[in-house]
Image (cartoon, rainbow, N blue to C red; front, side, top):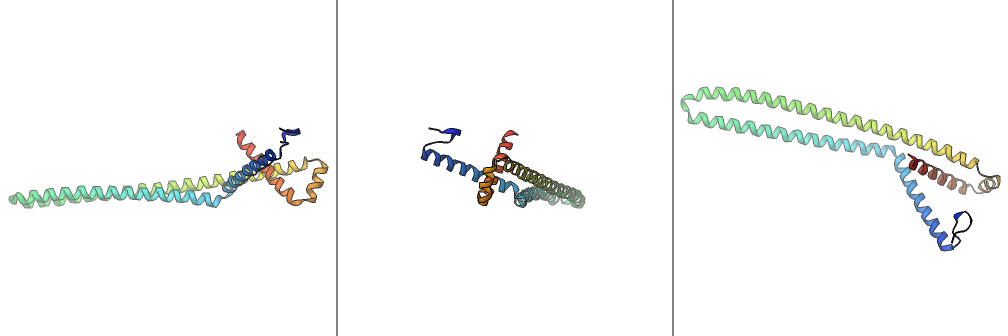
Length: 192
């Protein structure tokens, strides 16, 4: 059964309502603490960038090993042909050498290209991480400023007797301001 203002008259219901409100307030405080912890979020973004860079390097290593295997297989094939055709050994040797030079040049080009791509990917990911960290910091700063203004305004709107009671109990003022700020922040987030 509820009394005036929607407050439960039953003591157990009132205790449950208070506990639920405390849990919601704790969740909101935890969410705000995470959002304001910009260095931790920036570290997470940097760690993600490192992981993606490591994956790109592994991919490049795999491509290099694959191309090297192809070159080795081709060189083995050409060497066997030279042994079978002894009369054409000199011509084949020159051909193999030329082919190996071309393949080596191709491999070097592919390795250089892959390394350049990996470097570009790492730079791109790092730039993205910096931008995201700056956006998170800006949003956290704006949210904190708005919460302070709203809390101050809410305290000013209280009737004089309530302000007098709060003046006598500063811990209650701080807890109330934090709760009110978190409530306003949460309502503002729902409105988005």
